[in-house]
Amino acid sequence: MAVTADRVLVAGATGYVGRKLALRLAEDGGFLVRVIARSPDKAKDLEEAGCEVVKADVLEPESLGPAMEGVGVAYYLVHSMGRGATEDFAETDRRAAINFAKAAKESGVERIIYMGGLGEGKSKHLRSRQETAEALASTGLPITYLRAAVVLGGGSESFRTVYYLVKRLPLMVTPRWTTTRTQPIAVDDVVEYLSESRMLKGKDADRTIELGGPDVTTYGGMMDKMAEAMDRRPPRRIGVPFLTPGLSSLWIGLVTPVDTGVARPLVEGLDRNRGRRPVGHGALRHRNDRDR
Image (cartoon, rainbow, N blue to C red):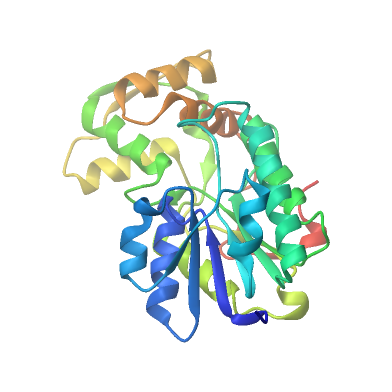
């Protein structure tokens, strides 16, 4: 089968952002959207929307070749952190990304589009996101690397954390990470950036794109805005600088439905990036200039 830019693959399509992206691409029309899923039953809605669903697993290299046949652009939105992880998530993510990159190269895929997070790599979570980008680029294929700040949307773990803390606690002990500055971005804007990235060409495609909204705030500030949107009084916050990321994640696990295995790496990333300059809205940098 000939490779064509009109055939797009989405890995991670059963995740929150991946599902929204696949549906958006299918809605755009004019090209085939193929998604891979370990359990195709979880992608029934995508199939009904017009996507081609193929059973494959990024940890099973032999399943990826057939899934990538004829694909021009491949999106990689896979993350193994938390829920169901049977080993170190960073090592799992590295192996999965290498498998994907090799299969893409062998199948003639022209480019990979990947979304990670913003940060300086001081936590295991942020280092893993950067290492995943490097693994995807290891075969020399062009990579469009989007690095997003906090994503706001009903299925976002960061959003759910803030929502349930505000909903359930009139008073809360707040650790240092609640003062970390960020520029949150709406999930629909993230999906728009991902969708439009498919159209980039040449040097414009082989680059890093930093994504952030126009407003600089903190997690504490987001709690206040969330309370306002819910027509509730903002929770009173008592700062406790010695509350560790480990204790913070256990606290989040008790108060919210967010998985502790997801919460801890996220909190560590926030705690270790306090004081970092927030990203400028839609800032663009070439891949070779990204944080090292």
